[in-house]
Amino acid sequence: MALLRVNRLDEAERSAREALLRKPNFAQAYLVLSDACGHRHEYREQLQDLDAYLKLEPNGAESEHVRKAREVVLRILAKLHPEDDFAPNKKVPFNTPSGHNKCEPTKCGAKPRHCKN
Image (cartoon, rainbow, N blue to C red):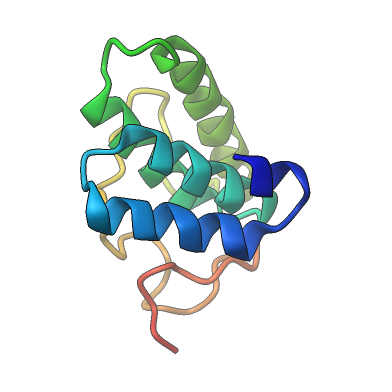
């Protein structure tokens, strides 16, 4: 989280991914990834990371805050992608390429995280 505060997004994301390699159920790492995605306007990926956190910590100390953040991200996505169904309770599949137009950048310019190109 400290790396995010000083706007070192790449390092923060790398550190969170390394933490997940060592401890796959480390929910806090998904919050770091979510924040990094939010800073980059990668809202679909941010939503996936928020969902991953909530899956691991449905009743955690930060879960209510994360749910509210998730609603905000859904509203942003609904504005950016009105053709998609981003209802507040809609589940976006974790780590799937749905809705991003076959690895092309989304309308908001974000490139899907799973895309190797």
